[in-house]
Length: 253
Image 1 (cartoon, rainbow, N blue to C red):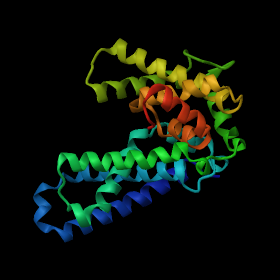
Image 2: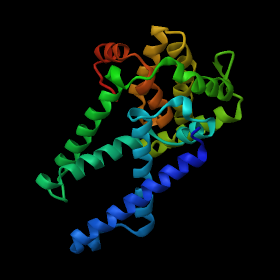
Image 3: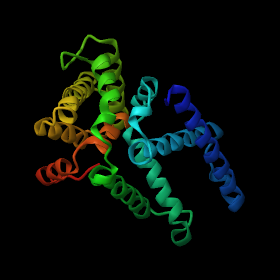
Image 4: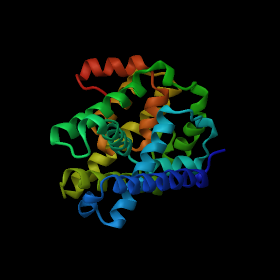
């Protein structure tokens, strides 16, 4: 059973590898030392890269949801979907070094990011990436006991309050809009739409709830956690995602 100790063990190990790769990069281009960020920022990047690697494993790797315990799921709630996007864009940049070089233009950076998004999209629409519905059982119990009361979001619940608060802060960080009520309303609307839809969509096979689930992540991807994105990637019917893309004209992710 993968626990919170497993989560931190994996991330710490990958962060160490990221640190070693960064130091090798320095050896390859010693003249670039002056442009390197400070040590704390480098360590933060190493950790975020490790989180991105872990999210790819959960969303598209040989990960069994039934082997994850609830402490691991709570750690996933603290990650962001954007973490894996940035990680895959970084991987694209490294893969393009032979032809593009270390330093990239704005258009090349955008190209790396779009290349990353195209790869991530396949996780959502490839039937081979989906897990059996029985794998959702633990996550379903986790969501019901942590956030819901009779299928509805429990707004006076401390865990719900913390989740909304975290996403409201995320909205402020990403948009720069300091209007607290608007950010809170945006975050609360996202949480309500996602968590009241996810179980009926994945266990009740309700197509309307599946569409709600997809659309809220499409519309507010910056607020999506790695946990929430992983549920879509692993359990939502690819045809439902393609149908939503056709209706909204917006592709995942």
